Image 1: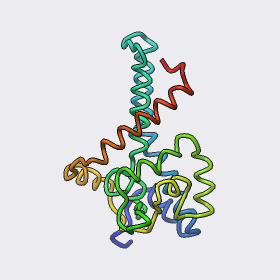
Image 2: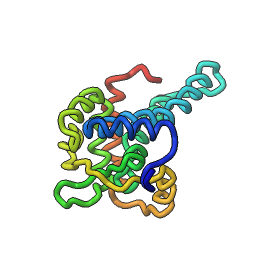
Image 3: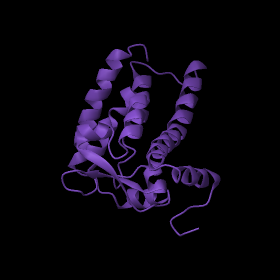
Length: 190
């Protein structure tokens, strides 16, 4: 085992299957991200729904919608730190700006992930056809490249050293508009 490979059944199996086909490796990254983000987001949502159903916690005037969209906001910003999502760190990928060939900004990463909420299955199909770029990458002018593999705990290191930039204001503004638009499509979430 070389030093960039990690122990664990999931990593071992993903790396073994990825060796079969390079396209699978990229799709594995997308699926692993989806699984990780689901594990992060779904349990708090289930707890909130149970608390609401049992009237332990009362939500009014769209509070539940705000909480739901906040959780989705976390999902859409999974590449926020160093343009690497949790799965991209494990499997060795990074989102880069096609124009500069440098790690994509937080805003570009957010824009590229906007399509996930409405076209996730289609994104997987496009990812099979073109492992470097999916639909969101065309919108944000980004692509995914092979990068150094990292352990998940590097997210905490990046979080500690992160200074919030003007991009965060743009992300919040776009996020509010985007989620407001989605809330109009799902009016019964209160």
